[in-house]
Amino acid sequence: MDENARMGKSEIVPVAPDPIPAFAGGMPSDLREQMTKAVKAWKLRTPSPHTRRAYESDLDQFLAHAGIEAGAWEQLAQVRPEDVAKWRDALTPTNRPTAPSAAS
Image (tube, rainbow, N blue to C red; front, side, top):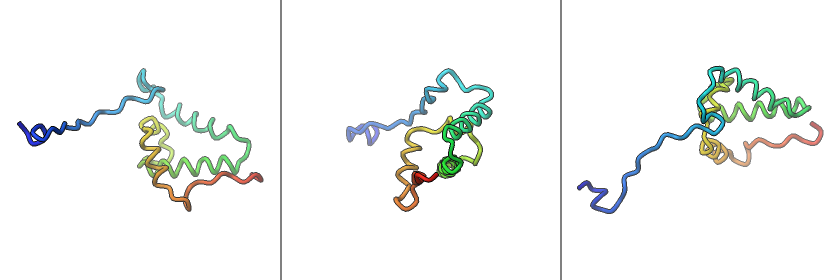
């Protein structure tokens, strides 16, 4: 009997994360192209060029924090909710992205 079993402790076995729901059927072969289109469409949802630049800056900050090369949009498919939470928690009030002003 090992030490953990003798002490009534169970062994923690790491489990590979399930794919995010959008890719549960498998990753598309043209993922980079699709993710690039999705990011561009997301940024274009606002008419303000200032807000689009702020979105891009925020996304670049997140990618860097997650260890993802800038523009490697297909890597976003590997991001888990806990990765986003870690990024959020790493932000201090002085370096958190701020909402654009009403003049944007």
